[in-house]
Image (cartoon, rainbow, N blue to C red; front, top):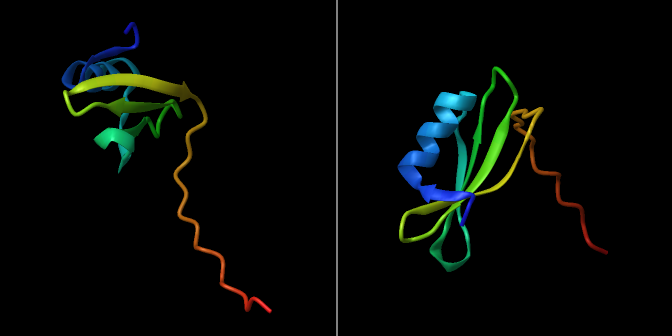
Length: 79
């Protein structure tokens, strides 16, 4: 796969080329690990998926990354 490489290689490339560090992590389907990397200085971001075998693939990337801390909406009575 052209957009995949060993995880160490991908993480090092995102750090050295774009200044991106991991901002969030979660478990996806088939025990894959989904991570968001971003640079707070440049605003670039990348979403990766890593398989259980350690192969990391780039899923999406873009610009204008922002960190948000939004509160959950209050629950209303369902009538």
